Length: 231
Image (cartoon, rainbow, N blue to C red; front, side, top):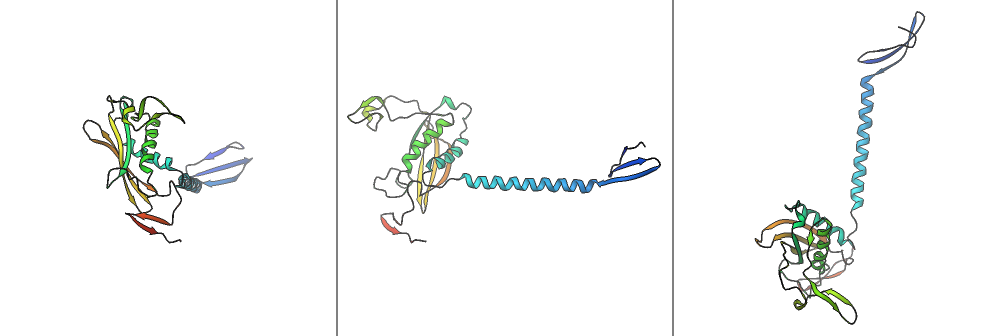
C-alpha cells in the first residue's frame, strides 16, 4: 500500500499512512456512532420545525373584534369545499340571502344580541367569498336603473318596484340559520338547489359575540336583562 493510501472496510473507515516499513493508524470512526449522530440531528431539526409550525398556527388566529371577515372566510372554506360542482362552477349562478335566527326564521328588528347584525353581514361577506373562489353570485337587490336622490346615487334597493321582475336564472341559494348562545352564536350555512330544494353543501361554525363590539356587562336574553359579573 503506497503512502497516503486509504483502506475501507464495511464496519469501519480506517486510514493508514505508510512510511517505509512502518504503518501508522491515524483515525478510526465507527459508522454506527456516526449514523446515530445524524439521526439525532435530524430528529431535533424535525421537532424544532414542528414547534415553529404550531407557534405560527396559534399566531395566525386574529382576535375576534373587527375580524368578521376572517371567520366568514373559514366558514366559506368548509361550505364551498363540500360543493360538488366545483369543476364547472362558472356555469351556475348563486344568490346569497340573509341568515336568520333559527327559532323565528326572520330578522328580529328589536333584537339586542351582540350579533344582531351577523345575518346581514354573512349575506354580504359570503357573496364576496363566493366571488373570490371563482363562483358567480348574483345580487338580486340591484335596481333596473341608477336611482338619483338628493344626497346620493344608488343601485341597491329593497323596493320591489325598482327591481328586475323577470327570472334571474339563479341555480343555487346560499343561506343559513343563526343559533344564539352564551358568548356567541352557531352559524349553519347551506347551499340549496333552487329547483329540487336539495342541500348540496353545508357548513357549521361558531362566531364569538365580540366580533362587532367589546364584551358588555349587561345583556338581554329572551326579553330578560342579565348582568355579567366582572372577573
